Amino acid sequence: MKRLGPLHTLAGGAVLAVGLGVLSMQTAPAADNAAASSDAPAAKATTSVAPEPTASASAATEAADPTPKRADYAGVAQGNGGLVALSIKNGKAIAYFCDGRIESWLKGTAENNTVTLSGKGSLITAALGDGKAQGRLQVGKAKWRFSAPLVKKPSGLYRASAIVRGAKVTGGWIILPGGRQVGLMDIDERQYPAPKLTPGSPVNVDGTELRPEDTDAFIDDL
Amino acid sequence: MTIPQPQQQQAVPKQNSAPYLMPLLVGGLVAVALGVYGRAHTPTGYAVGLSGFTGAQAMKSWLATGTFVLAIVQVVSALAMYGKLPGVQAPSWTGTLHRWSGRVAFLLSVPVAFHCLYALGAQFDVPRVLIHSLLGTFFYGVFVAKMLSLPKKGLPGWTLPLLGGLAFTTLTGLWLTSSFWFFTTFGITF
Image 1 (cartoon, rainbow over the protein chains, first blue to last red):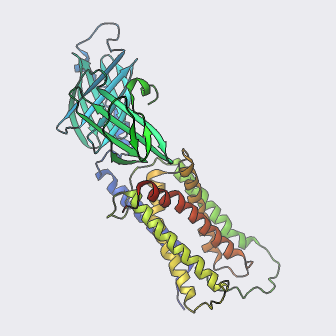
Image 2 (cartoon, helix red, strand yellow):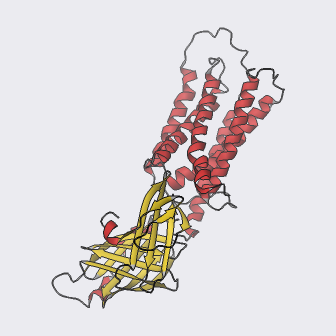
Image 3 (cartoon, rainbow over the protein chains, first blue to last red):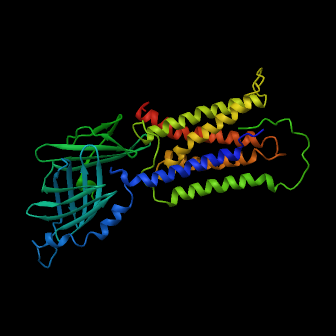
């Protein structure tokens, strides 16, 4: 009459949960995708800021902060082919990286012609000057250099966010002056290919119209 | 997972009811602890799961659907044991079926709940997620209370049906706010 009782059931579930926890902790750092970010890289952002700016800020040494009040940059991540867009407004900086598969939204500050931004597991440091932003980009464990010239509408960064049938939907697009573009839809933490964006026109997601906005519309909210 | 014992309904002597409240108390503590954990820790965005699915959401949706189907088996077998199915005489293996389908259902649900709590945490920003978070913590509280009540003798006859019914109702809500939502939003994908 030795049969498994309800306490065994509970114990089995608890053991299973603990096992999953141990496995998750062991395997988590190995996953190098942007979504699988722990807080570690973001925390590092604040500490690794200091050494970077020195070389870049040398171009401008006036007393007043030479950082542009408002500027948009977009370019290619070297060695990855993904696009990077960076926008600055009154000392605030936002950026978006996307290669059609991985994406990351970042925000940070612009000061003394240097920008430092961090996002979920991602980090950007760049120097502004000569009509472009040049710097480094880190997403998960991967690192690339990038050089992004100043761009004007309709090129640059676009973002759409909405709740579609209870799902949080965020779309990001970068359009380069040559017309090249990349984008990604994020629906409740999962990534889907974004429809092609024609600036000014809505895009259709699952029957709902989204209206992607340019940087001016959302830089203050991000 | 009920051991059929509805025939023990003869006068239960009035006595200290504290032992019968213990399962409820522990269940409540479990629910609160899960909720606090889900809210307090920083979601990792990642947790191990079964491979072979397109993503964590698909994996969870299917595991939860498996749990839900087995939960229906639970209700039907419980009704049979309590003689509530007209014209059905519960076969002798009904109790075993009930115990093991419940056990498998519970174990299938653990990786799902683990991913929810560990990778995502309890979140309240949209109604679906809010309801799902609250029901999820409540479900395991009820489940623990039910498991701890099973070996107790002399409980009121409605204890197990009530706890079981609550567990099933909660699970239905959980399934609707997760798997059903997933399948209707993204289609039936693996």
